[in-house]
Length: 118
Image (cartoon, rainbow, N blue to C red; front, side):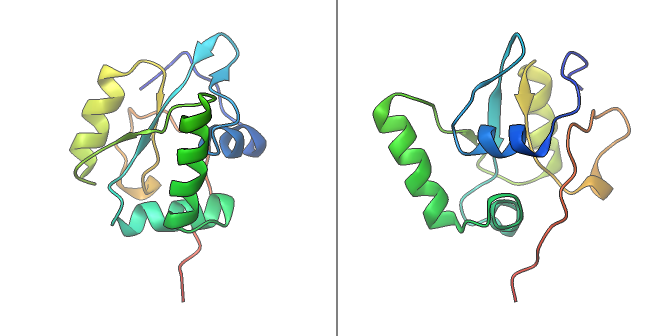
């Protein structure tokens, strides 16, 4: 969807989702998060950062409180249509979703191997 953004490196994705950076090149990045109770969200953060939801909430609370970063926009639903609507309305938006469910017009910036919690 966002043709201006190029593929990302692992370190860039990790730094974005830890609130350490909010720019890629000239682009101010806005992040999307799925609802707090979402298994997709839990598995995403576990796989990317080896963090559980409460650890991520703590990280974002510290970043927001210090003024260093704003927490990702949080959807009320984890359905693909809501993600696609947000991406379409957010030109420099980045979201995560299972790759096998994405339509072909969505630009993939980074692929992670999802860890399933035992």
